[in-house]
Structures are given as C-alpha cells and as structure tokens.
Image 1 (tube, helix red, strand yellow):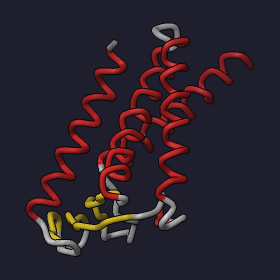
Image 2 (spheres, helix red, strand yellow; image 1 turned 135 degrees about the horizontal axis):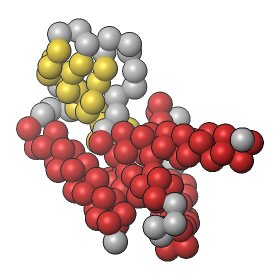
Image 3 (cartoon, helix red, strand yellow; image 1 turned 90 degrees about the vertical axis):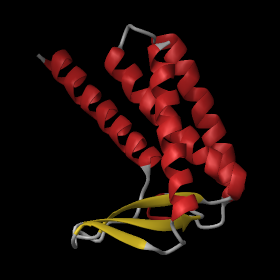
Image 4 (cartoon, one colour; image 1 turned 30 degrees about the vertical axis):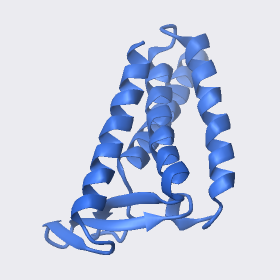
Length: 150
C-alpha cells in the first residue's frame, strides 16, 4: 500500500506543478530562479524524452498503459520482499501516470524545469520520478550482482 501512496503523491505533485505552470505562465515564458543556471520555463512536449517521436500520442498511450499494468503486476508479486525494487517501481509508476494524464487530456506533456547552465532538455516532476526510479533499479541490479558474485 505504501508504494501506491508514493506513486499517488508523485502524480499529485506532478499534476499540481503542471497546473500552476499552465495557469500562471505563458507558453515560452521563462523565470530565472538561479541566474543562468536554473529557470522555470513553460514548455510543451508532444514527444518522449529529449523531444523524440513527436506527435506519436497514441503510441505513448498504448506503451504507457502496458508499462503501468506491468509495474502494478510486478508490485503485487514483489510486495515487501524487495523494498528497493518496489520503491523504484512506484516512482516510475507515478511518473508514467503523471505524463500519461497530460497525453490523454491534451496530447502534450507540460515541462517547466529548465537547467540552462548545461542546456539540458526541459523536464517535469514526472520525468524526475521516472529517472530516479530507473536509477534506483540500476543501483539495485548492481548491488544484487555484487552480492551474488561475492
């Protein structure tokens, strides 16, 4: 249950921040928070990470549906037996659903976190959750691999 609450919290935070960006910022508007390092920039993405596969809304909806079902089945099977994996999957689940809501409702994902210092693609809370979740999964694979080889 805790893992589903984490996913729900990620979805809520993601949707709240996107709502605020859409309501209070013009598309393309950029507000510097830390000089030339970090801005809030209102942006829309009709593709995947780094803007790839633009205008493939139905592809993303189908893929996300399959991924969400797979994660839920995995969480049911794994449960508390592998807490690190379950934590990671719940983060990916929350992020995937957060961006899924945007794609279903408007056909585009609201992005706004803009690290201008390194010219990184603009992203959002859902993207962060997915990235961190995948990072935790990779860390788990590495740690489990080390346990088995020791």
